[in-house]
Length: 475
Image (cartoon, rainbow, N blue to C red; front, top):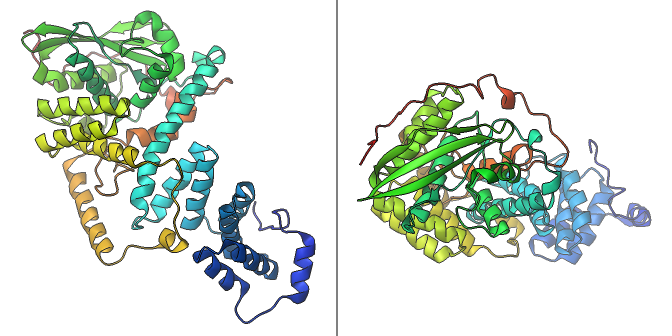
């Protein structure tokens, strides 16, 4: 709506006529209505804000506050209409973002709720509610992935792999061929790190690991249940990926293992085996880096210096910390948040600079605290700016961000869910998923035309595979 128009939003004409004839007082109706709203006297607020709107049908703040007041009376559809109307004149108002987020969340419109909460966090960086909203964002993003996965399964027969963007890629769990149960957990960490590194490349749209996990849960599959080559075409459709990375872990004894990786093109049916890498358990992250570079080289992608440095960065050099992180991922998948927190804390104690473990801890804390009912706050809390200690904390946070930016080069973006510690999350993987989930990760029944970026001339060409980070080739 380009122009404010309140006549179709639920205020009856006879009421407007009555107010035009009999309204008028020293204290404006808006001031009264806003005060009633702040004091949570919603019935009085609705009455006075109606008067205010009729006195001035272009009073955008009265229109906004009226939408908030009727939200509290559970008239969600009407509240949405008033708030969206106010948004045409107040495009960066935190109150509008906050309450539209609440409404969309309550009505199960997770994508819209995520957008509104994200905008609220952007325009209110020092607000005390930021921590709660950011934690809620992570949970809602995860819920969206879960509901999208369920919808994809319902629509499976109608899905067409041709409509999936050419540059979309999924990484499955590497199948444990050894019978050593510890390698099952290691496989999750290996897949997570590979997704992290591929997410650094702008040429790729990478499917989030959470989507793979939800899909396996919906299908009742074990960790390696989707890794067989015969399952790749179905996997590609369900994950919304044109290219699928599969692989195996083989225990060679004496803490040595071999990692075999393969990549399949779902559209052409071509299958490509990559270099088999063998090393000690302590070399697993070096092996993962080489797999990532092998995939990038295979498609002839020329990395920027920032992308190169971001992928080369080792998340940790402490194998015990990495195994604790892998256990944390496993507990996270089982929704055992307290155990996940314990493992992530262990990883952090072993390596305080292990950024991914910090992020895992923040996600586990947010999930453990999550309540099904959306948060409620007073008007004053929602628009409150940080003062005193809050400003000092914010200054320290900004300094920490600058330090992190220097230490962690590349496309490191600050994690959108950790207000207490602004740490880079190697590309904000889960948050980026929300921005790409419709065009790339969840193919719809109708076909989609790929974008120009998705058909870049470099993607799909072959190039020699190089080993970038030395690892042993035999025990």
